[in-house]
Image 1: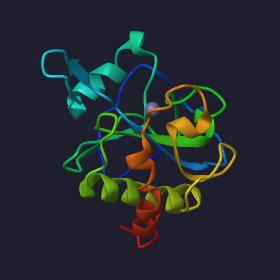
Image 2 (image 1 turned 90 degrees about the vertical axis):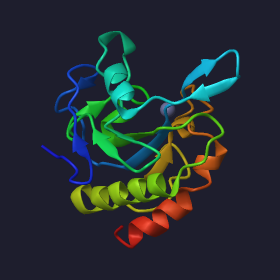
Image 3 (image 1 turned 180 degrees about the vertical axis):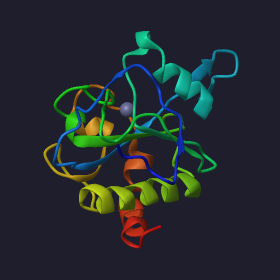
Image 4 (image 1 turned 90 degrees about the horizontal axis):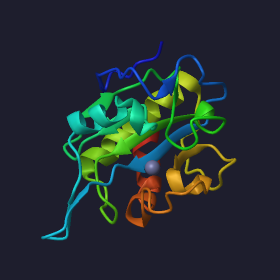
Length: 177
Ligand SMILES: [Zn+2]
């Protein structure tokens, strides 16, 4: 059992595999949620943490992540990190990674609170699983990775503004925030 003390425990009951996360734990995969498009205004609105929870808890959705972090830094943990989320392939990739959804739409950068939230979680993964604090530069690498790095679709997740923040997240994680 592994639960992060910086997140509120909100367990889902579908879309993950109990006990199927394997060693080594390579690190953290960053995602963004995207959001619903208002066709009149052209504006996309990302979900709330509660909305994300109900999506991940819906059997028909067939996708999940261990964590979600809101723009104000509030973080929920949906899946024990010893269990396998379905964030990239729900299979051999997710078996070695912990995943987080940042509440945001394509093109958004992360808020300071999300940067610090991801950094704190990465520090905890380093302390708990010995995952290295560094930017992953290829799909076989380890550290902080992002969805599109795995080249399994989702090229816009999490987008360049978020990817470019990974060195900053690493710098804060090294300091133990
Ligand atoms: Zn994604």
